[in-house]
Length: 120
Figure 1: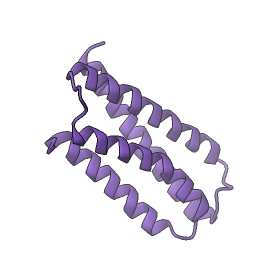
Figure 2: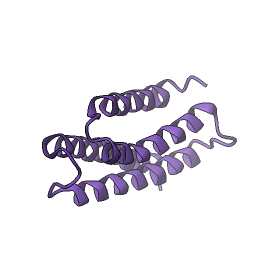
Figure 3: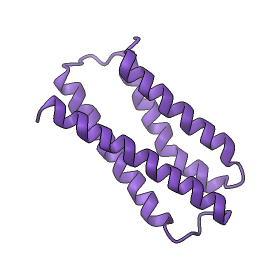
């Protein structure tokens, strides 16, 4: 598959991840816990988006011939893991949404900067 295909799938994964995470934050904020009607659908959407990001990200790395992995790619994999963990943070600490929102925003900004600047 082409570089452009993987890039489009990666962007779809990013938008879906941020959309579903935002929906989870709003739902948990309004209800006070994870027991709101769309929780399972949003959590599934977050999982699908993480899978899309992982597959498309590795596809992009293959198209760019990134072997061995540069530091910025390793940092993006760590950010991916932290995004996967963010759902657990939202479920376990529904009262502390502001720090979780800050963490999610920081992770998204860091991933964007690493992808664009490729500093390492």
